[in-house]
Length: 423
Image (cartoon, rainbow, N blue to C red; front, top):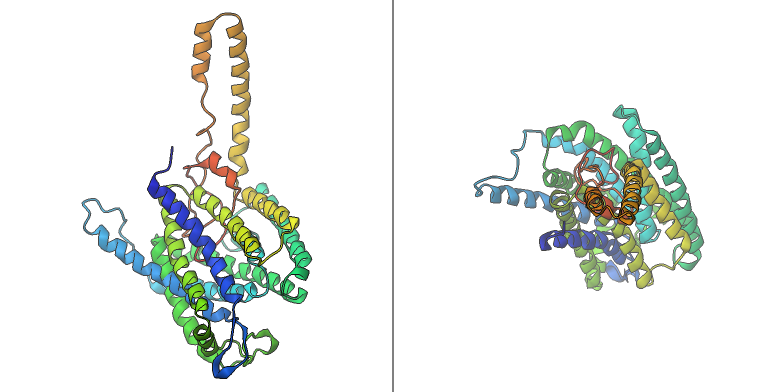
């Protein structure tokens, strides 16, 4: 079935805003400007302030949720199910994990390339799978264990590509290694966040926009308050500001004043996060969760292509290999091979019917030929119902070509990859 203009718009909005998330953050990191008190020009390295902006974008989803609730009141047939009563404090532990993991990832983005950053985030399925076994009592199938092993191989390949390309970039080899390790470490925290959400939050059937917005509220308030002590905590060479503290928000605002394009990059990051969450949830509702996964995999390719086009990175074939291996690992973990295998007997059967029909046609039995042809089905639409949104804002990286096989299909999936908010 062809997409409507509205569905095409949602898919384009998700792809564009999802790519802007990472690209805008990296663009801000690449700027240099003088700071407060006439300090010399230095790079804009303020990861914790950028994380505050990200949570502000998530927080705005709460406003979108209440706007939808208000609009639903005037409809004859409300489209939103009545929400169950729950304590907002349920979102505090996941929000703390989100805050920690996001801050670490913003630090890592200063040390490595945007494309490697996006690819290495695929390691979250390793830790999600292991933690779901340990704390949710889940039993992983053989294909899921195989998917985890393939993902590990893909991470090694992407890491080798980073080591090979470190000579062509402004980052030192030690920075690249540290950045890659920080990204993987952050995925452990993201996996803990996902397990906490599944164990304590999802049973209350909270609307995804409300859940994302509530966590954004907690993250924004807590991290904004933490900027005060961070202003005084020494960080040595780990810090990128002249005072060598953990975070210098005043220096960041001075740099923005001297280089207004930094403000544009930060605004693009904040606004894209809000639109990305809204578009992602709408794509799942209006089209399918599978389409959302396809768009997320395309997002990684867009980020890589733009980074190459603007000269932030140099081309290395190992990155393509690593990206492909990571896609295979994610597909195996999420069981995307099953519909492909299920189609094989049908293809054999159709081939057999086609051959028999041709033989009958050669014998002149035209009526029987027509009956045989009427039994054949087009290839499209034969795939079984398979994918559904496992939790709020969930996204899974999968091969883009699978869109042709799984379009519009829904049913339960093992634990999905990614937090799906902002990043």
